[in-house]
Length: 400
Image: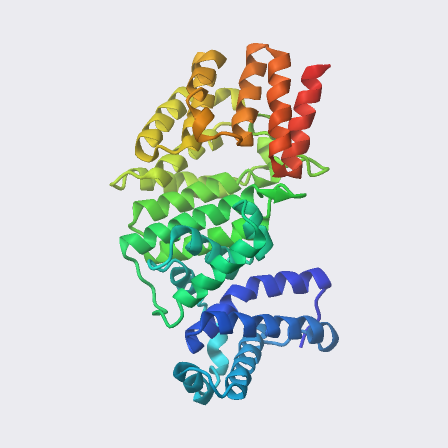
């Protein structure tokens, strides 16, 4: 047994939760029941470990405790289905189960092709990413009850599904998309007092490394890992001493993670030369262009603009169009960027990033009043407190 601080215990349980859930789901085949049992085991750990000390094999302790809870539940319910009754007769998982990490299999299970993309993302964020139902609901702007029903239906849908890696293109697309969204939620939280959740973005990187280890020749997997590393390299410099947002152009680049940049650039170059060319490879190339220069003013904006044009052709994503408008402004002036924003009024109606970008471009143009108006509109629309504070400060500075 060993002792650990309260924060250390929380971090340990957060890290072990998807691994434990993966092991219990693999053993029982019942996602919903396994999650309930794991939650009870986590509660037991949070109650007993501070008093008795952390077990030498905490993961095995949690798996054994959750498994016993699941067996007890099965034995107490006489009307359980046949598979649940069979689970009650099984032996407990072996003691050496902690040597195996089932998180990746759990990820592929959550991205089952029978689920809609929205359900797969929600289930993965809940089971693998560790977000609460309330946090996921806030991220997707739906009521918590609606999200709870979506996750519950998804668990029932994958109940009894094969718990093995499935690298089909359909499943892989789902997995990469979910990892991409998980990373983005960690890198820039959609709501709350913190700009970023490093635990979530770090877990997304860990899982993407695991997928890359299985599929090292896949250009999209390599590109996504490169994109995450190159983006996460800037994490420390994105906030000031008080947690305030620091925009890319104003960041202290000496704080950037050079190991991530070196690894990310190498992966980006490798992925860009691996056909077919996809969205993650292009985004990684753009991120590399930002990270490779020591000063913001040395950024190769013409090349970035060209890459955004290529990315827009591939995806048609309105957020890509918005970023292309910013690049156009940096190359050809703010009026060029504002012209590209005009068609987005319908696609991104009410989205704070559209107003924030307009504020930035009108400020470049010298129209302080209009810029302040858009910054305030963006501040009212965002649910992220650091972003709201940043946008409000920009508006106030322009109004002086």
